[in-house]
Length: 492
Image (cartoon, rainbow, N blue to C red):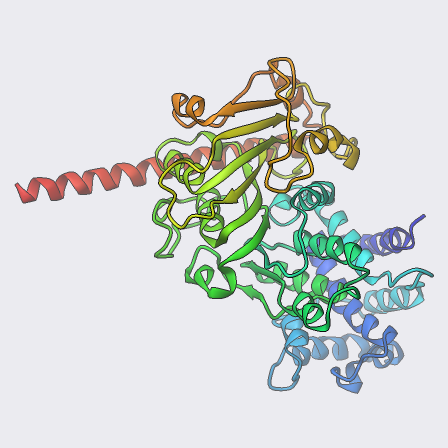
């Protein structure tokens, strides 16, 4: 068994004693974040940033009558920027609080973590272990899991196809726990002997400036920072902010060479507040504004791979305007229709959009000549907890996509009986710019893949959420039309 997998399984079994007290899986992983940070600093002889009384050895040797109080005070002080100089430490512990109520439970956690063998012969196991814990959390937390955790095999495929390169600025505007950016970092390290093949200036850029992200949920941002720390990625270009607010206009998040992201599927709780989102500025959902952000945040010639729900492909009104903008400003060369059941909480149908920004500032004609659609959904096996998505499931798509990250490799239209087809831009226009194109047999078999009541309930909830978003968007558009009519009438 992989050393990190063994560590994950052992740590996850400890969750049982806290679950009895009503602790959620995310609370448990967050708690482990604090303890693992202190343990890792001890293992790596890097405790200079931590006051002596809060270091791992001090916690481990504290009497049971004092250990919980000392730990609580450690969380408060380590998150206080007036007491701790290191910004990354403060960010991880900011507003931290323990969910452990009994000193005996904290002692058991500390002893168990201390007793684990952390290092394999090949590599430090901390980063892999933490990634494994995040994956476990997503698998066990069906509601909302897809909002912050993308299946790692899907991330790996998207990164492999987009081929991130050293020297590029790579962004995730909905960073979650950092899966896309960490995978991109791994991909580039593997191609450059862990960056040692690069010149010193290039190494500095890769370690400090290449990867950039935004996350707007503080608890998730904490997990993100810890994940970056364990993978030796500088957090200076990562913000706790809302991408759809003016924060998303920050120059740090402009002119990206590559964007890899899975924006949240749920409603936004209010329209975007950015001045530059000219199409989706009044849309009460996340999906459409995030797509517009990605179009605008790419540098000329930059590329993107974005996970989106089906409604992005067929929504009328603002949705249609956005698709027109996307195909006008970018070469939307590939759409991958994903199977259902891979996002545990959502139960909704999802896709990956692959596109490249035109090299022209203001394209006079459509940058998209044709869209290739790969249907991995129709007639697909039922995916879920008992049949997880595997990397090999994408083999045929990867082969069909080809080895050019801009989608320009030679491709073959497999016809009405095949999974990969080409649709010319003119044909898409006759469809009303609707990209929700089906040609294979019904997807009802895949929809039956929801395996347990929680997944069925989550699917119903997700469909209702999307219906609510569409209703809001319609109301917004009607309100705009009424206001315009009133102004026109007044002018007469």
